[in-house]
Length: 154
Length: 154
Image (cartoon, rainbow over all chains, first blue to last red):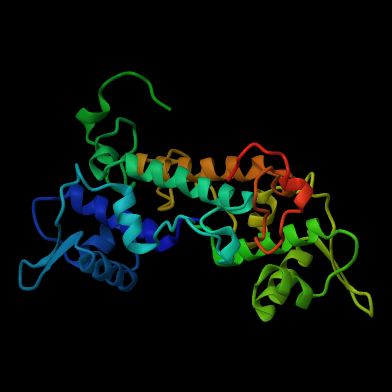
């Protein structure tokens, strides 16, 4: 339901948001996200084409986020890679039905709507800000001071 | 998010549930659901292997539902074709995280959970029983007497 490619793209975007101080090569992002570098490079091209990241050549070149993590949602990233296509017309396109959906397609569209709403709700910043003992991308360890608030979680 | 193949499989299952009086050939199901026959035949093989439909050879052979539409859910059909794989462990499999999910993967898994719950909620029978002016598969016209209840619905 959520493609591997979309999940990898989210890892890459979270990596860039978490390391905003410099540009990162595809190799560095691949290492940081544990995604095969060839696969990651193709994903970065799609994200660049969609305007989510910038790509700069040269010695200190690489990828940076083009949009603020406070504004960029999970939905924005997923839509670049493996878009949620809501069902607005009968997929069989029977004229007599017009824009009405039968119950089968209504249920499917409602499920897509739930996912869309959920993904629109969270920004990349939210994911990094969230309190918890694990940090997105898993290989980023939460800093000791961030772990200190003593309320036990999970 | 919901693959074309899964949607076609749901059309085929709804067709069989709506025409339970006899077995139907792949050609008949393909015509009734407006799915290309070669594609439909492959889907029927998967559904047969998964035990959702029976296949009989011979002059009056074809496919029939093996399970009651009152028990068979959308979830059951989707899981045969394009399964919802919940995220129970960090996809990067970092030992230090154990079974804990970071917020990124928690949000993704929560969305999958919403879809799973929705799809488990509806049986194939529910889809056909539902009141409304359109009937699943779109090319099945609702009978005149079924349209009569005058409360306007879409």
